[in-house]
Length: 351
Image (cartoon, rainbow, N blue to C red; front, side, top):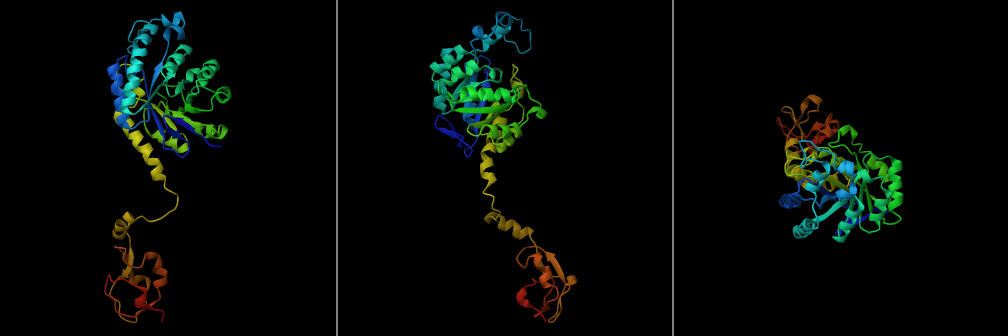
């Protein structure tokens, strides 16, 4: 079976470069100027897409949760609902950011946390949709979004294989354009809980869809391992400064980290090569300098039968390679050799 997902004319499959999503979430802190800067920096880092999170907070939370006091160092308002509202962008901001992303030449989409948000994003003609780990069991929402017919990315943090299978079974009959992403819903995630081998499991169980990794660790190396295990989509949280106010900044990548991660992901396919061991042209000069040859350990007269003590192994490698030593021992010199002279087969006889 062929795994394939197409987003804004970028084809993601087992042979494609890694598709990298910069998860901005609400790291813009409700400031559209900062959001634009995050988009621009992400583009300069080489990512394929930037992603926000969209919530209809009044519809999403119970009144009790919305009005719950939120006395926290990362709070932007006195209650949790007001805090979330402070961070939320509306239609005007999304339209501005959509145009800005198009001008930058970067794909822009968002996570839909509820039905009104899904409608909101579809009305803006988003090219793809993300479903968060918290909605892995929200089959009604996933099927609702699936009917839009747009590529879907589903994170699987906190889920069992039964949960993931249920989501796959619910979505793919409606919309086969699905990427299931290994994820651990811990922020930041301990390296011992990343469980990257689940990528292997997903690839085996779901051979017809693209597999990805949404990684909440605070480094870059695990994303490379995820790609090597077969994840063709990597999502990492992105910030301008990890010390900024907000819960996500501490485990997000700053521009330097994102740039290095993308750089290394792009190098993987080139570095893997074709599996045929060979010498490259640019290896010849250093190997001539570092390599060894067989030379006379001391002056040897004509007619001398060579012993191990008569041979030295020295650089550079412009003579017989050391693996020929056993074929030289016992031969007789046909001409005199000075110390450090190359020992060559044409200068030797068997008797």
